[in-house]
Image (cartoon, rainbow, N blue to C red):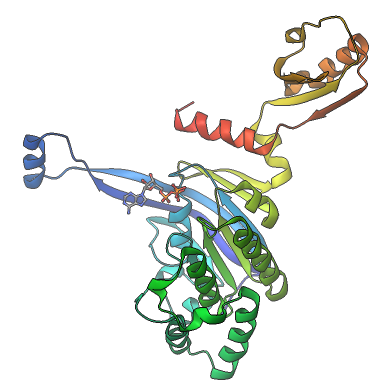
Length: 333
Ligand SMILES: Nc1ncnc2c1ncn2[C@@H]1O[C@H](COP(=O)(O)OP(=O)(O)OP(=O)(O)O)[C@@H](O)[C@H]1O
């Protein structure tokens, strides 16, 4: 099958449910459930739709249990959809055709290298070369480049199980990229990495996408990582899509308030509550939380009544907005 669209990834109404046994507490209930098992359905991904063109790096974010890993597994063909469809480079991932698998890579930070851990990294490279039928010369060229960029050095001759997490990650990334995937799925790739390893990783992924034109989908709980790499964000929550767009507009979409920061030069006390909720008030600089709709009017009043030396009206910081959003969702708000 050949690709039939400019979009590397096409997701249409993608849905995946899990059937989970209900286990009541207590011995009696446990014994009863052996005879008659009851199940409930968990909606992990519900009617998710998006398209990703080649070369785009997209951040898939959401609170714990939102359905991010399930989405990645569906797109990589590890799981089958319950309904809807995914098309990656023109393939149906669930069919796991060899040429599909040779065109994508799924890298999970929790398990950067699968397979037998008693093998050396070099053995794993050989195995992958054979599996994906990568010509020997191409493989050597890619490996030489990856070795240098990722600083693999003496890792090649060590057993996978003897590597630290950071070393495993570097080797795992090199393995994932050996066959030059055109779509890269990165699931929490820098979990547990130290700050400089995580930075090097981000640099490398950005360069890989820019130079090869690969599409990349990244899930991460590190906002700095998403901000550094992704021009576009897809936010999901309880399996459902909640936002798809530029990172810069996410705060605006999610928060119903703005922050007014002003620096003042007054000696008399001011009752700031009449303007908005006080977030902080220090060194003659006050930050107020104000309803988005009322922000222009409140700013005008402050200018007239306080005569500040400096004033700005900004969207709240993204981490604050997401923190509130995630907490409200978890508590069912
Ligand atoms: N194998 C499974 N069997 C049953 N339920 C599952 C299974 N895998 C995931 N789930 C459920 O599906 C939902 C989505 O899980 P998923 O792992 O996709 O979320 P996530 O966004 O990746 O979460 P996290 O940020 O915590 O990694 C959750 O409610 C989870 O409990």
